[in-house]
Length: 294
Image (tube, rainbow, N blue to C red):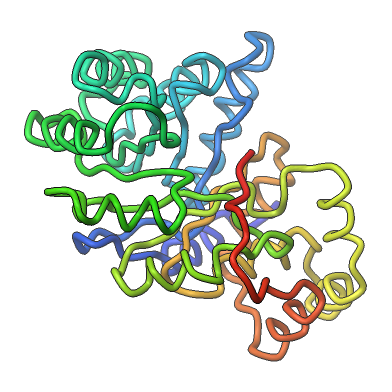
């Protein structure tokens, strides 16, 4: 039996500070593809509860995931312990205007079984003007429906535009795809966010799947470090994403061993030499590239 208390304590010790001073887990739980099959719901709820028990109290979801099903799963998982959980949800871009955002948020609240969302993100940029989305986000904060707001899949120019809008700098987080095999944000977006003290939330932190994920897991340096440390290749990749204190990583897991694997990574700190070796294998681009989105 794994030592749940030890893992939990290590995870609480590894936090990221938001711009308002709040601390959140460096490694949270993703819910993409949850809530899609009723037959899987009990298993998914159990998985999230185990993750919470292990200290991963930040849960990321969205109205898009499972057409609201992932929010329902999240709501069931946090029943009775809501005050201990940091819930992140996301609004569709077409719902992020004055006419629909409040209703969209209220529907998410109902599915989550809560009266507030800790962090509400614009899922990606759409046709609604940014100033209108900022205004309605600020309105939701004033009404107590959300504690803070942020964005997702915003590149540097989008962030620069956002910062010029009144109250745009109240943005708390930018959630983007980021892993060892996709380091494009390091060229300009990540430095920009760091200059503004804006944390980045990494989704698909060990790659979504397919050829690239296999390439990462099979890489000789990744495998060597995993072997020397007595950890898994996934843990090497995940530990790399949270090597700095301003990145939140949100891996999704349903299998029990994967949940333990993710939670245990909170106690894994790669050395400077290990990080250099990994980055030599998968170098950051030396020019601007399009933001990866899935």
